[in-house]
Picture 1 (cartoon, rainbow, N blue to C red):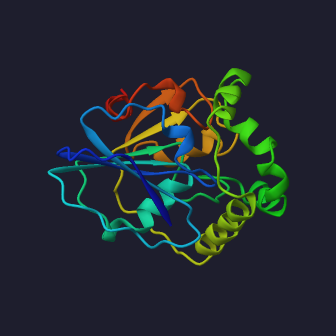
Picture 2: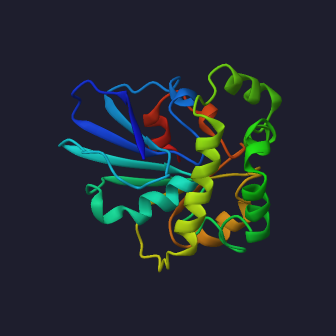
Length: 217
């Protein structure tokens, strides 16, 4: 696992952000941090957490595969004041609650090709959003990103998750082409407060800062 401080100004509140598969910090630098420090975790080729400093308050935002990863590591994480799942579930490969297995295996088989363009185009709602991403796109090597998906699948296959209430809120995009919106709704209905967004799998261009994500109602 890699980590990056999007903001470290000795604030009293820390947001820990678990990113989705294949991402790094570059596409998230546009989000203002205000009075939060923000620690971003990504690259799940291994799940070794960095040392997390002491803060007065902790907040969790996890996105896509990060929803699963954060849940898996919950016993090693601080106690959070708020925990938000964004376009993901603790069952990332699941025919009813995540990415259908056949779709995931196709993505895994053609990961390198997909990462060269098609995958990222499908993440965004519009061409305008995709072009915005191109100006601040992921810098990780494609081989590293493809290997991450293999590592995640091995982890998913070998992990028997019995979900116990953890997240407080789920943000679900209405036009998610990666993790079907319907499957996310299937899982989170009657478990947490749900906020629906008119967006694609990457909904972050709907926000100006991290606090807006925490306050999303």
